[in-house]
Image (spheres, helix red, strand yellow):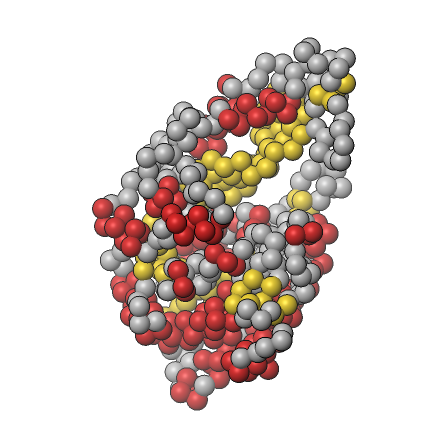
Length: 477
């Protein structure tokens, strides 16, 4: 950095930044077999760090068949498990119990050529942002919170009060790929019992514009899966077989287009069954804290015209379900030309679900639709279903929300807004049910963080704000 503020200089000298940078260097892509060792090393590092602040900590490895897909195992199953990190700081019997959830796995870094810095070498630039995969999602978010906890435990004023709360810390290893291991653990009665809590804190969401605090009152659910369309028994010469053989690439384009009507609404029969519409109060609150269409256009570089025409941007992102094509792959895509008729096409799809929708029923509806609309001369198969999480909304009158509003008002005079996040954290609904805890989702993400994209980053301001939030909410609880 050519210039550095005093605040930035002080932060760089702190144990917070040193530990944060060390954590970011682990390439913890929890969905890839080649990163298993990195995930285990990171989990071990986190266990040691938690012990250093006085927590009892351990690594919990899901049972065989719940980890990274091992393509060489012969059975196509999951053979290599990724450890979940679990820690406790025990207080007095009867004290409030808080469960903190975060995840240390990250998205793959590709496309690598679009990164301006090495994706797993944290780099602080003169814009005050740390660039690295996981800088925000979710290493930066949960680790800033833990740094706030460390500082709270070390303060003189806290020492006589530190027995008045029980803390349970759960760091997921595969949130970005469906939390398959953690879902398996949640099938066990003893593990569920260990998670019993009064409040569940999640720091994996976004704040409003200019880092105004936001309380997330709902999340959409999610499913993601692979669609494979097969035509001929091999790629064919486009001259010799053109006009004769069915084309899987063209067929996939037609099949994907059939999922939506011309007005952008979902064309899949039965997909929208059971939807619970938002209340007038929820719509008003969502509108008050949501970015404008102009802000979205500036952010994404084009008109925010996705979804069903005639519905507001808030309705489309917060309270309506979606079916999104995440990627299509078929035929030849290299330099020059290769004149073939592709025999197979693959599409990656995800759905975002709202309260009232069943993940299994919506998947079945899409499966029926794709089978019914499969082009002539081709066959379609669906595989690799993960997510399987329902959406949820929380009551605005919750006492926990009132407490959070008071705390966030201390942190920021503008006060908090409510948001219904269009994204999903699939395991939160399951953790809510298993622990019996009231969820409180407050995070500090911003659009410029570019999560899931090249050049992900997190600012020192965001890190410090998340840290202060941790100190204030834990003290209040």
